[in-house]
Image (cartoon, rainbow, N blue to C red; front, side):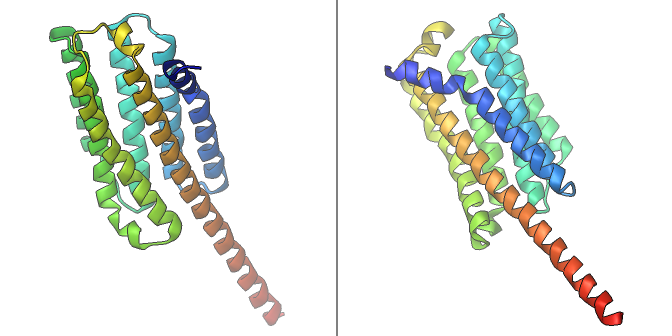
Length: 238
């Protein structure tokens, strides 16, 4: 299988993979419902999977509508993931900031499709936007780099995934901005970029899943210790 076909095949597996991640986060929340950030991670995975499926299957078939709708879903997915990362550390982005980010990115995608069509600028908007969102989240949880192993891994994965958006976007400067969407989408460059995004997204999802399962296990162990102490206390009184 050649490069573009291999990358396309892997990209096509995105929706199913992230649905599985979403189900895993949902299962973890069902065990420990006080961890509300797990619901945000579930939503992030399902939003990402839906956007990827719409993009792959070209739903809707109108390119403009597809661009705006998938862009909106990807933006919501990244914001949900960033908010979950922050909430796990007792922080938050705030709905006003999130709404402003959604409005700006969606407006820019609309403008550079319908008013001044430019495929590469739309790529820059999304890549830089998502990179900045995750970089801001990494900065606010930077204390985790001194924490437990799972926390250190999570911090560095978030930071690396955030940083990877910038050189990846810089590499597009050598591409042909006048190429058709179909030609650009079939290019080796674009397919390799999709493969890179798949790898980065998967790494981030695995790091978050490991952190979430560690949190759930810690809660279950703490609960078990409390029950043990209560049982001993009641036994001594008896």
